[in-house]
Image (cartoon, rainbow over all chains, first blue to last red; front, side, top):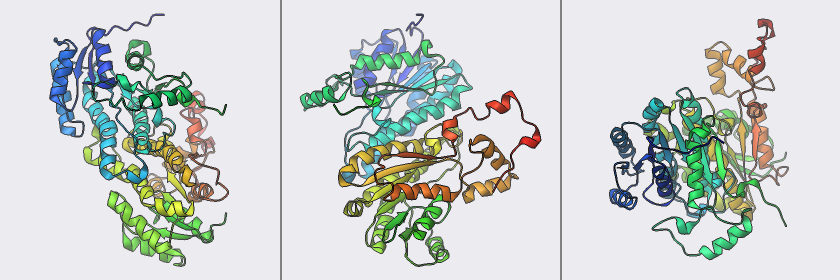
Length: 259
Length: 272
């Protein structure tokens, strides 16, 4: 086993990383020596996160409203200029709720597709020149819900995440000639209590019971398990892996049967 | 397959696969709403198809409001709806680094959002009739397509996920949602491109496709009719490839030629 996860000297941009899963991914890279650009719509949230993570020169502030392409572009440009290079982009935004088709509005559609898919594309496009220079890589965080059908109310989110996994394949082919790898990580149920400030813990008991019944491993994933999957895909251990989808969902999308 | 008395809306049905599906539904006895952006083209399509049992539903489904208007016109004209075929799609070309926000927004709106909001607009009549929805995706949504079809391909993948989720959500209402993934089909667009480069395109398609030939619009339409029909009534959330084996073939198609180039006489002739 020659796998080593050492990110010293590596420069990473993680979208939506002031809280939740993105934050944990950013902390993991940072803990292994990387410089990490912290991104959120709110500059205050970015500052707070950087402070909570201990500050220092390896944490770069990169706020941008994910619904504004011009802000995404300038945040990437500033972060790359500050870090002087870019090796890894993680598009970690995975925000969606359940909304039945009867209640889906144009605004809801734009918000879910915009923050989950469009922002990821334009962040990746902005990062691509720097990634080509470093022969770096991209990890897109999609969802198990994009692989199979989601529960009632998940149609918009699953369309966004299914499209996102495929976007990784398109990018993988487009950028392979430049030595840039692009992969997708699909989590299943992630512990909502670990989702950081703002997470709604109500109904957690019922959800836990449901997950224990439905999920083959009978539990949610921890944030660290998700971060580890991302760190693996970004590492040299995965140097021949591109266009791939790594599903870490406790067996959820493998299938189920009547017992 | 008998569609007598059935009421059908096919979006984008003045040309290509949509037109082929509308004609086949019509020939099977259905009353069909014809949709296209241009009211004159809709009117001439209806004339060419004989006029009987045909209803105009012109309009652009590129906006949320447009989707409602088109579905409303169809439902009013038909007196309800049994089958919705979300067929509209555009494929303007741009590679990853050249994609503008305008390009992104337009392709997402027409190819992906329209399917969601036409289905939403049709929910009440489809629930009433225990109807069916067929979404037209593409083999490009299953395996990565050509680099200049970047946004097109990812919208087609989104349609596949959307199909599965809507199939689960609408199942309690007995409304089925399925999709087809056509491969290379001899639509007017492909025929024109083939004519432009002296049959080169068909030769490439024939070589790439395991069945050795391009698919016809009729072959595509019959898959749409099957999923919409009583014969296909246990299909729900299905993703039906209609591509002559292209997706199964992935990228191995040219291996044999690479290892042992065939003599020029062995090259299969392009077929219209």
